[in-house]
Image 1 (tube, one colour):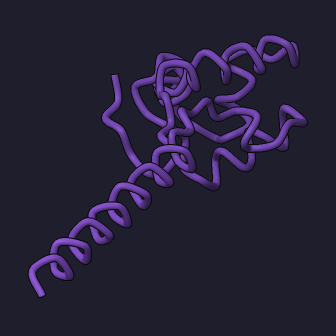
Image 2 (image 1 turned 180 degrees about the vertical axis):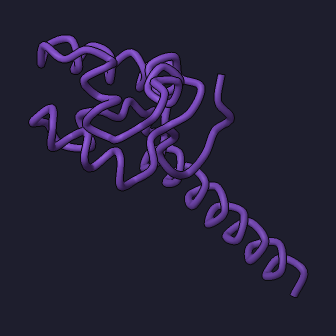
Length: 107
């Protein structure tokens, strides 16, 4: 689904599901969030829940505080980071070692 990266990538769909699940567990409605954030219309909240977009950092912080969870508890991400990054670094260092050996063989 996502390309391999050296850093975590947020899964929008699963994050949206998580936001909706946390909202329901807190006993809040979409209208409650709409009122809390002062939104004229609830579309932004539905877009978050459907994984169409993420809340801004400010709104994510406010949402986490309202739901009494951490911001990271609301985000679902694929953390390919460390292991993928290490593989990249190792492959580069192996390539450099091979290049040095080739240079030495030529001398």
